[in-house]
Image 1 (cartoon, rainbow, N blue to C red):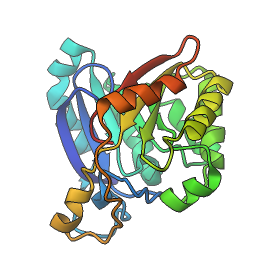
Image 2: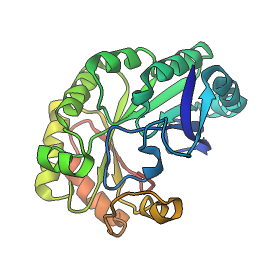
Image 3: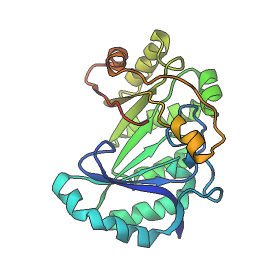
Length: 250
């Protein structure tokens, strides 16, 4: 089976434990206005970014970094776009990586059926699960998708005890107000979230729009300074919750 791969990034140190190789898959079921990889949104069959790869051949290529994984406790991170859109190919890829004993992280927006999430939970070592905000109307207008299923899946995954880091992109004017942060904190308390990573906004995706000729809206916002992000992240702290602020691409 083939999988549509946008890019492969080696020596990643921010996409899970240890040194990792991150595979970005094509296609996304959201259209977040702050997307750092707008070239990844179009379906796998559309556009000229990336390439189709045979799953087994891809695994052979990824195993070339095995020594780095073993020395650092790293592995493979699957990102996007939204990797779950290529569900059958993703399952086959995860099964193949599992047979090789490789640690896997799946970065997801959580917008999938519970059945699919359950299947993936049996194959994935660790999840990075994005939470973009609690306000349903703002979520729809800024991402193109409803957040009800996402929140339900976040609660289910947390309750399952499966390793999961919840990642929150802080976007000025969207989800960084005191009210929005308190709502997020309350939800994190409700689902007993253990690990939360804050990703302050950076306009990295906007630089790609003209360069790649992509039809995509612009936010025209400045990057969120790290001190501001750290201050806002304080609202999200909870008992027994490990927090981090990563000033990097979101």
